[in-house]
Amino acid sequence: MINNGLDMNVLKDIVEIEVYATNDLTWETFFGESFDEVKKEFPGLAYGTAEEIIKISDYNKMAKLYGIKEYTLNQDEYIVLCDFDMQTELRNRVLAKENYPLTIAGKEYKSKYNKCQEGYIMMSTSHTNTGIILVPDNCPLTEEMKEMYLLSANYNAETDEGKQEIEKIFLGSESSSDFVKKLNDNGIELDGLTKISLREASIGIATIVVFIAIYLGIIFLIASSAILALKQLTEASDNKQRYTILRKIGCDEKMINKALFRQIGIFFGMPLVLAIIHSVFGIQFSITLMSGLASTDDLLPSVIATVIIIGMIYGSYFAATYFGGKNIIKEE
Image 1 (cartoon, rainbow, N blue to C red):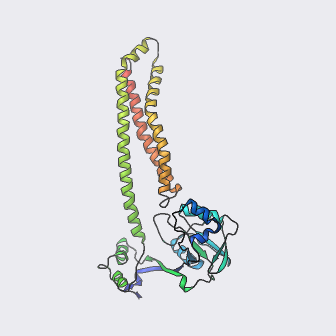
Image 2 (cartoon, rainbow, N blue to C red):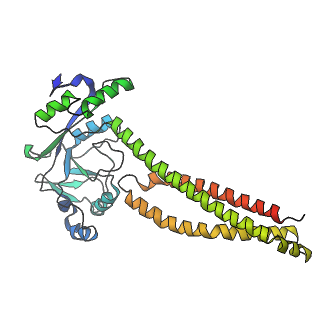
């Protein structure tokens, strides 16, 4: 089968659905009586944005292809799908009301759930779904409400090389892809994502961020730890005679080592306490900044791993400084 210069045999498991939208149902309409409160709290949101509406059977076809949860609806119900944290919180405020009513295409429906559900229709490397409303198949949506056609499919290839060749058909430039050239000639704009392109983009961004963060972080950590260690070892060397006097007046090695441990502990501990306080606010800001890329649960393993690595490096310098100081002040 040929379609706009594309041999459809390069695809398999094809699912095509229709996405609807109407200016009668916008974010402002959805929030209803809570709109003034929400707008006061978040004045910068585009409240005139029309809600995306999809029939339940169409969504379930897409969900089956993606391997995610499918849903069912009664004739008078609707479901809101959302995974963008801030939008989910705002929508849940109104959905918490029992059977929150919503007028869609001139007919009133009630919410099946009192909070947003997980789901999406387009793949992404992050949580970017700000809201999809699922309605029963008999919802009186019209042709004028159709916003776009969405096609999802798998590449009809078994090898990575074969998939890369098909990838070039869709993501190539006009000069390298006859399909893209044909669409442009017909005035059709192709806007799409592929699993391969998403994975490559994700790996590229993650590699750059991780490299810069780890490199700079470890360099500064080692430098500061080395300075602290050098300072304490120098102090121990300068005070060697004082420790000798302590032994002469009756202090045993256990007391002297305990005093040395506390001194080094305070010296290493004060910058660490300041860093922890700074990190608490820094992590909160980072989570807010990255709310569209990952949830708090997604970031938690990375935070824990970072704390462990920093603790190991910082602790190693502390231990080396303590045992080095003991060797310097020990009685000859």
